[in-house]
Length: 196
Image (cartoon, rainbow, N blue to C red; front, side, top):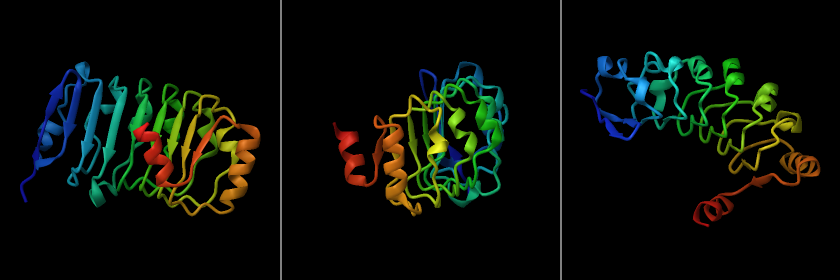
């Protein structure tokens, strides 16, 4: 099967999708002028692009890549301290957040929707700039208010379609400590937020 890379550059945004994938092009991305990178529907990606850890991206999406991402390590992303939006959403095979993600001090939005993530680490509360966290439709079964202790900017947590144990108790406890946080429990609320 021949895959190609569809490269779309508008200002400093690059999108890579399935279509004649070229490993040499993929591993020679010019990160100097790049602000945003989306690798979507590119199931043949067996690693993150070379040099991504030295980039100054503010936006990075790695989603809808299917099972090809099962062996990928995401540790390098933790070196992108300028990162504000990280999308490891649908069909990303990440099971746990690498410890290096603690360095993402500017991260405002973290999307893990429909990923293979199984738990949130206790150090998540160190991401003080975090405004939105989406863990909808994940395998996470337990949440603790402690995970969000220092996330003073957190405004939204998306939890619809999760199997979190004692979800009602978690939401009540979180709202008692942080009444300003919006907990989105179903896709109707999500659609309302998007369309307003």
